[in-house]
Image (cartoon, rainbow, N blue to C red; front, side, top):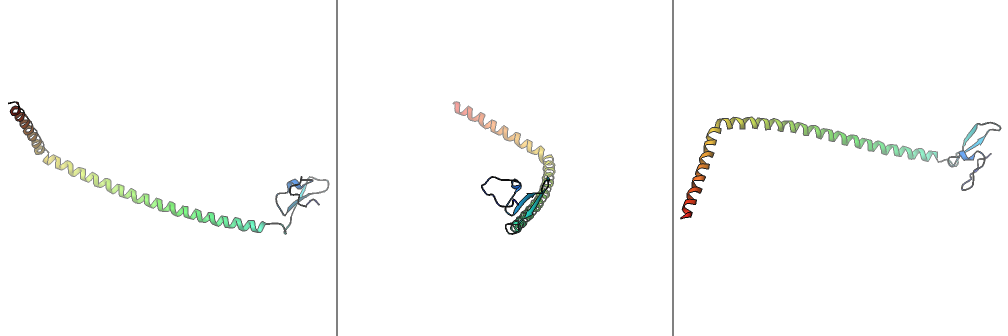
Length: 133
């Protein structure tokens, strides 16, 4: 049987199919069949399975954290959208009130601006006349 370990040595016979400690192959006499034998003394399968289980637990924990973070972010986005809708409604309401007040008070406001401009122009004109003397 070719089930001995050839670490560092070239492989002979069916041993090129050897994948790890504790696993060995042998060919059946005169056929293309390969028989696989697991050596329980050298096999680290239990340790490997335990390691894989712990990695799965870690990945489940990470997935749960990602899910909780995504839920939190979605709730935050929903709250921000509601706040934005309320702010938009408030701005529209204030614009309507501003337009209404401009229409009601607008004519007197324009008159005040024109009178102020005339007063400023008169002051500048008189000052330029007085300063030439």
